[in-house]
Length: 443
Image (cartoon, rainbow, N blue to C red; front, side, top):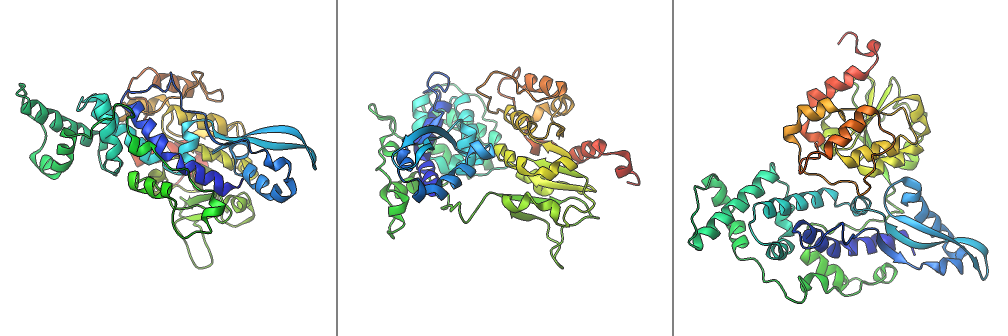
């Protein structure tokens, strides 16, 4: 077993996962009654026990990239056993993903799946189709459902309204005026029509064309062949928007992107002054030995890529992109203890959980705009988000953060305020207010 095999098997599971996700959004199956996670990637990997010397480096690499070590990605179930030639050893018994976020972050499709869920949920809410018909239609239109649109919720609400109105009109049912701009209807005629003629739903299996996958080849064998396996080709046909390029962990280690927000402390590489730098984690943990941190007093971790890229200038501040639970890899940066650490994430159950987890290493970490005032100010911009399966409140939160977290559970369908919905000047103002007075004088 190698990291490449784990990555390959994880990507191969996307088809089944997406089928299940669509069925959940359509109300066909229930995540509570029939949970999909934990998701096993590989079972019974005990061959390490007999050939430990041959696989020692692979085993070390697998552990170093696992959630057991980094706090994100796949998890390892370890077991201590007696082996024939190596005595008592710890072996990897199972490779699995504990939850949906770990899996989506690992296969790099989290944003696309979020858009997919939102789109299908919007169509279901507007009753454009019954559950099974909507599921069959969605599985054939994943590319459309995951397109990046300026206002996706409003877009799909309008699509559903048009389809419902036309369906009622065809059936001779009474209908009121359609409050959708004519140019919108004209631009999306084909998509609207496709909802009126959804694919037939199989009585025996809801979507056999997606589920009848051929077994995939072992990556070690596949590398020797020029042609793709049938299962990979099938996945590209069914879900082209989700097929990621091959990733070689050995040549592409976990990297950290960062930028300086300080005009007086720009990042310098010789004569170059780049806007952003990306370093492998193994190098980033030694960043304190470079000149990049000169005059830096605050390190801010931002979970949203758009906000990270466009955050306004702020003196003495280094900004790091830390999406999802991957931020836990930064626990290895011992030099963090000498700086003011700020975490800026969505107001959502998962981001509060990330913050709580990160504080196990750096308990003095402060949060930016993850409070009740921000939540109440921009509540009208909130949207539906995922809830933690564990009902408990994350332990390492301030009283204000706990109160805000509990507020999320009181609002049905609007339990996530995306960081992008908060104006940048508001974020900057709150950041500056958190800094010592001597850093903000003269502004």
